[in-house]
Amino acid sequence: MVIVFRVDASSDVGFGHLSRCVNLAEVLRSRGNDVLFICRNDESKSFNVLEDRLFETIILPRDRASSQISQEADADETIEALDGLRPSWLVVDSYKLDDKFEQKLRGYVEKIAVIEDLADRHHDCDLLIDQNYSDRTVQTFKRQVPETCKFLIGPKYAMLNSVFAKIREVSGAPRDELKRVFVFCGGSDPKNLTKTVLVALGGAEFSEIKVDVVIGSQNQNFKAELTNPYKSNIEFHESGDNFAKIMSNSDLAIGAGGTSTWERMCLGVPSIIVSIAENQVPTCEKLGREGFVRYLGTQSEVTNESIASAVREFLKTPSALSAVSVKSQIVVDGKGCMRVAEAMCPTSESELKVRLVTKNDCINYFNWANDPQVRENSLDSADIEWTGHQKWFTEKINSESTEMYVIEASGLPVGQARFELVEGTAEINYSLDELVRGRGWAATAIDLSVKCFRNRNAIPLKAVVKNRNARSRSTFFKLGFTEVSAMLPPPNTSIFYRVH
Image 1: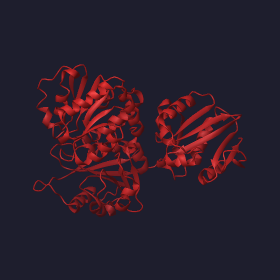
Image 2 (image 1 turned 45 degrees about the vertical axis):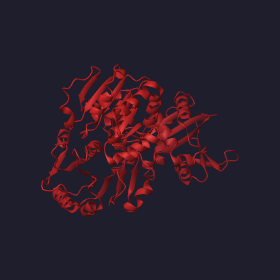
Image 3 (image 1 turned 180 degrees about the vertical axis):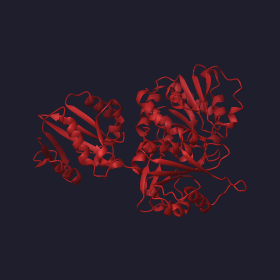
Image 4 (image 1 turned 30 degrees about the horizontal axis):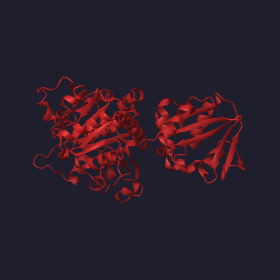
């Protein structure tokens, strides 16, 4: 498949759009797809990152006489850049492009995916991705897209560099003591939030805290000030390969409310954040209300003292650090690019794999268990609380009477199967992620899990299914199970058995 990205970046619109598209493109390319970027020229030369990553790129000319290029003209230039190429997907990530642009491209591409942070315009797309934590739902966008459009909504689809998920697997959660602070205020930091933060941390009360400051590659304002004297506990770093590692070593982060919000949450680093762009405000406010971050407001509202005061709060109540850390990691796991890629280029059913569960799957199991459809089909439909789940999960993976598996599609966890050994039988519990439901994978996923289980335990299998759950009933029939109507509790269920 050929996948084309139409994305722009600059000091005005920010660099998060380009960053997330590059992250997604890396995963798509790893799946064997060819990737092409079409971008408009920008004085900041931000597109050098594409050359560094060896992506084929076409740069559209910059109209120096006017900062506004019509969508129709942009579409014509994009079509010309395609030069007869008909990509399987066109991915559009721009606040300046909507259905006017997409309708003109319709005849030149197979499908269109839109990466959206707003909800105030129409799109002609087959897939809409909104990675933000907001009150927006599928219903929010229904009237703005075609009826056949599919949706990926929420920070589980946050398109982060794969290094964050890797570091998350091996790094511990931040300590219950504030010793190290990470500061990053975006790629360009146009109004020099970095300086405001450093002034706030300059007091003697913070002199024992180690401060790591990362300067964005396009941060022109602050580069000139690097010769200014700062206390010895403050160290400066260039943004680069060590960015995620430096962040993961911190106990608290201070920065802008853009893409780095999801990176910090993925690594479980508690944050004090400031919105530096209008589109960041709704997400920052909601994250603040629900206790995921300490939100201070827009940059115009923030002062040195308000930042210092927020840091003092964490110094006084260090136990809040670990609580926020776990809460954040439940919402963002760093596998958003893999999920988006799976939606765009589905794994073949024949390539599904099953593995034994590990301790790192605790959050996966928690999120699958609390999926609304899973809860509806469970014998006990009440929502599951994290602390209780954590205790349950630890007991199960250490139990000799339980075996737990994870189903993977191209390395992405997409479901689970659990076998509980009771009185000479193994009762099966399974579920699939909402991303892959409707693909008819249930029978294959269970069959693969059963084969793994059979290699270790040759005992009869049992499944208890709600009578109204027609899909699961059909799946177990397909796998050669025999149904026995339940005469005992739980009511309104049927029991399925298979001996061989």
